[in-house]
Amino acid sequence: MKHLRDMTLTFTLTWIFWLSLISGRCLSQVVQPRVPPGQQVPCFYIFGDSLVDNGNNNGILTLARANYRPYGIDFPGGATGRFTNGRTYVDALAQLLGFPTYIAPYSRARGLELLRGANYASGAAGIREETGSNLGAHTSLNEQVANFGNTVQQLRRFFRGDNESLNSYLNKCLFFSGMGSNDYLNNYFMSDFYSTSSDYTVKAFATVLLQDYSRQLSQLYSLGARKVMVTAVGQIGCIPYQLARFHGNNSRCNEKINNAISLFNSGLKKMVQNFNGGQLPGAKFVYLDFYESSQDLSSNGTSYGFDVIDKGCCGVGRNNGQITCLPLQQPCENRQKYLFWDAFHPTELANILLAKATYSSQSYTYPINIQQLAML
Image (tube, rainbow, N blue to C red; front, top):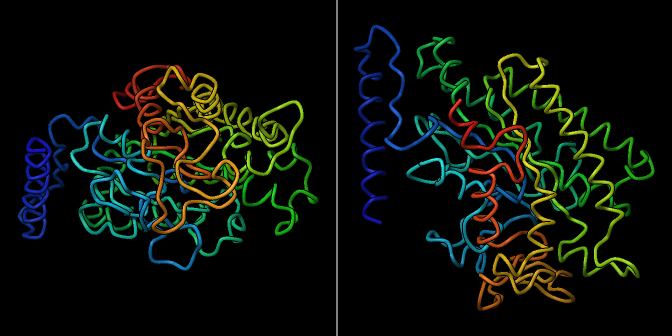
């Protein structure tokens, strides 16, 4: 803890010093912000849904929020709006990348803090604009990209209008985008609320989803993103929410949903190949296979220490997945033994295991791992 406090103090003093120089207008040219020792990239920008949201939904009218106990029961800051018991995947990844503190939610990030990154993710968000509206307000990926555009405008002031220096700075940053789960859970396979399943075949829906996603990722590229991680949609046909509703004879999981997701995932991997093949010059995209990793954690749960792979640690009904974790509900006692925290989201331990695997090995990454991406 002392080491973390020292690193945080060093980081804070560095930015204060830099701000004082800029505000005093005593520089004739832009000075690149100093990166704290051990931090592998200058900044980390995050886009996604509830799997990585760290508090952006706290102040809006939505059912997709987690700023109440027992969420955060194992997190030092308590119930911050993270949809798990402790750290999210990107929290664990930021630590592996050497960041002295967690990346702030965009809703709270201010001023020079934006130079080290921001988390734009929002629970219930999707690639499509209408996705997740059944749960209330949220920030869609279109809006998240627009928010990053606003961030770039703010950063331009810190670089005194020097676009070349700003672009050079952003080109060194890491970008993470984890989207698509809600486009299936809270859109295509929710026919009582959405018409997409009657408007599109499964294949056609994957196609339009990928077209939208390609446009959004290309917008991030135009704003300066060059080192980008994109995630496959996980095996959501096997989450407690689906297991509580599915009654299959030959399969534990809802393979109809898993098969639909696989179409999207295979298309996303091809998109990454195209981006890296010259479609977006100078960019390096990395595909994170969250489908394979979730399948691995489920199939080989005991080897990772998980005794329970089909029930949420906190929830109500069959598989603790019919209703998600309620305010002040008593969760399971040993969170380390559960793969899932609630009806939808993995536990902190699952997030940490996945972060470590994607950071330093190529078990679930293509064409390189995250550590290699950071070093480019």
